[in-house]
Image 1 (tube, one colour):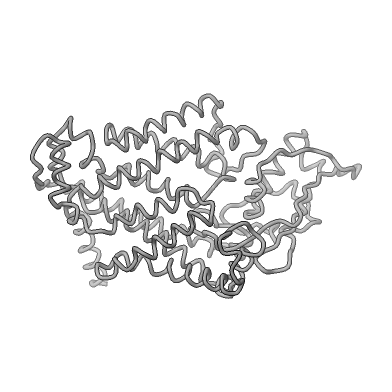
Image 2 (cartoon, rainbow, N blue to C red):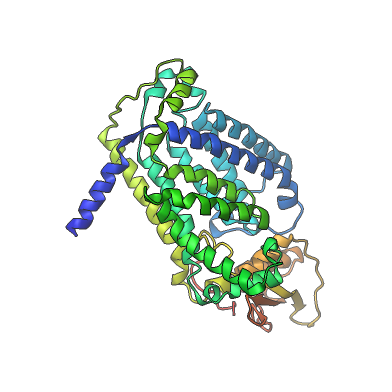
Length: 445
């Protein structure tokens, strides 16, 4: 126990040692462009994603979120583009990143049909950048306040970013440690039945399956450790570039590969960015000679800072494993799949997708159209809990209720290389059922 406490004390001390802000300034500049492209993506897809379809999937804690009128959403997205420019140049940075984070969170949570682990990563990084001092280097702020160019930043600013990038890689590897992945069934089914990995489809199926299965596993489990070690870091760069550049061309995963390549910079020791060339740029921006000064942060700030860092780390350590508290195979039931970095861990698609409503007295079918996006269909297949929200919408739309209406779900899915089977008992009336986000929902087979 004493050894553990000594380790915690040493780590707490390390969190509050001071480092050069140069590396963080470079990261802010590069991350700002990622945010710019994301804001443009949101602006272009607002109408398609949020205003063209009838159903929006919500988490229990986001039901209160209103869908703003489309002009308001367009205005928010436009302001996000402007905010990302201010983040890039480092002017009014704190205000800009605060507005951007809140706006990005709004569009992220307004419809979980469009949830993506990569968007979740961007949101987490935005949240981190809210609290770190990323505008003390290579920013226009230095022209207004040259003295800020002499300030150092606490080491936890770097450590928390290292943690989240390491954890994304490592969790992506951990979820592959199961028989479905290790047998090659996930990659084999992806090559045979999906449009993923198009550049590998012309290869011998067994060779491509083994290559993608075991390279992906070994890469995800090891690359974080290689980056953390000074002696092995250089050996990780080439695999990282190969892995992410391959993903750029073979998978439609947007900005994620670029983000992971950029944030590899965080693992380079900050003192590498205090060389004369970096200081010269600082001098030009700040109109003063660059000279690091010690800053004595008060003890209360230090105490609160590392407590918040520990809390953030603890939440992110536990969140991906909450599915162990829920009965069933998470990749089939989808219960606990969000916020868990389960990227490309299985292939699941519908061979039949039908929703029926019947009048309980007459037994006549109630015809009703349902205008939803392909993303809603795929998400309800991946997470059958959302069929409850579809059911609630259909009942409301047709002015029906569970007392006079029977709702049957007849959705058959193929899971990896297994034979298709029904997600939900086809004879089960779900009209009166409620979804539970914290335990297994019995209606999911």
